Image (cartoon, rainbow, N blue to C red; front, side, top):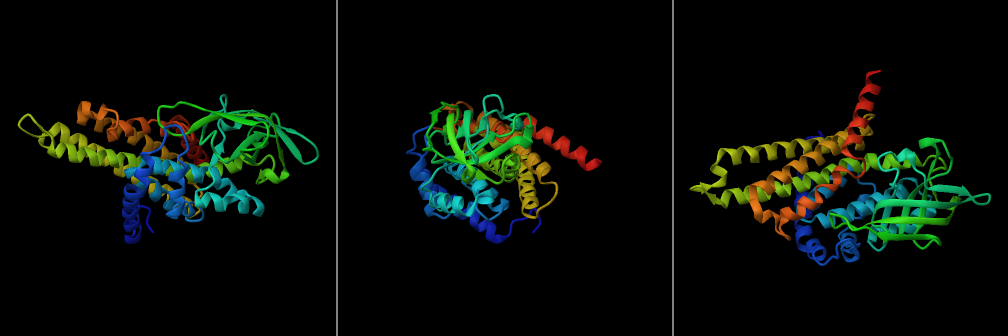
Length: 373
């Protein structure tokens, strides 16, 4: 299937997702407490079968889900994505016992997952992790240190945690662990953020883990992290495209009915040209997201570059489109509770998380020079 073309089944499915988001997910999202995990919303995602589709359906399916949900209910989109991000390493690298213990509950929406990579001193530079996994007996470690800006923390039921098992080895000395939230010595605090997502910090005070908790192989956790990010980065772009499309839809409706200077705003060239630019950039970002997702599903060699390009273009585009939409709506868009006020708070974070825009440019340049050799 060409990267730029969706078949009728995909198109119909996206429309169905948008309808479900409006009818069954948005009412639950509206009852959520900002900064906390909305367990009823996650459970409904499970009942609808959307969490099950996170595993084994491919990157394009993931992107279509995230874009479609984001157009109607960003809270549902984020809840779905965080379940996938936290649990994908278990699905891809877990032992049969780890998968049997956690994945059925993730699919049902009864267990909350989290991806614990970022630290106060190691955000985009993931190879600089300092959370220490000190040897403890013949087949165990003790985790000591902290994680910060972790989505779903401190309310998750389990965490995919990346810790340094070999000092001074950079990316080659990191191990991924599956750490249940009830492990002794693991505590956390919520962080009050601009967007209403559940985000927190974690403190590890000699938290015990064993070989049974390792995801993949010891000292090979960086591969687990990058494999997960290569899948989810294009879908961050899909989230951004969904928000951009929602802002564009609202702008088309507003400028068609808003009267000013003797006629509707759409008849003013300065307005019409801005709307055209918003649509142009949104569609370009959408196509790049679909291309990156298709490349991932096809096992292409240039996935890291395409994933970085898709996330970079789409998140920067969404910021532009939402900002233009606010400008064309005027003061009404800044009122608390307005769709664009909500999107304006939501749209900023994706340019930072899962690798800031500057890091995506570094990845793209590195891959280009590698290909040119």
